[in-house]
Image (cartoon, rainbow, N blue to C red; front, side, top):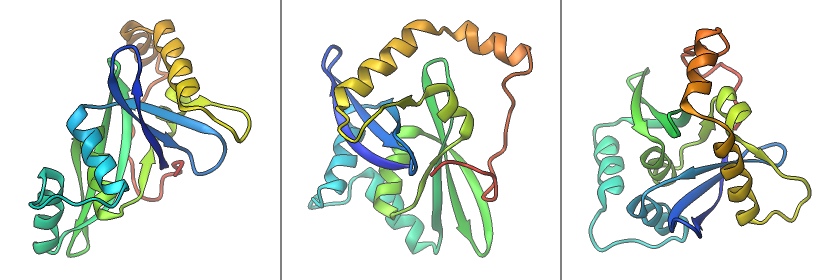
Length: 177
């Protein structure tokens, strides 16, 4: 995935980060907090703060401890909230750490780590847009329509029916980047 942009939901004034699949025109809109949006935008625009912000501090600490940030992965959508993990490596061992998707993306931008999304997240939540000229508002509107059609019960029913699995994401799994 790549960061297509950071936008605002014009109705709720909530920031949204738009992730785009590497291949095709599929977009994953993720509502985030204002401070995380500012942190992502600041780094994308090449701006720096006079003192390290929280995400900078974390990345700096890991670097000092000789820990690499391997990747971040948006792992699932549960109760209208995206969940993510940050994969770190030290001395050849990888560890997955649970994270809010917004923090994981802010860290990925700083560490220049790749961003992935689980296939299930893409299949359930991504919006496919046609053509090369894509408007961020169109993507957000399409995703809102999707959210209006689903409920938490839909995901529970799918899990009970066996349609949703707990999948541990490994580096060799096929994921869209």
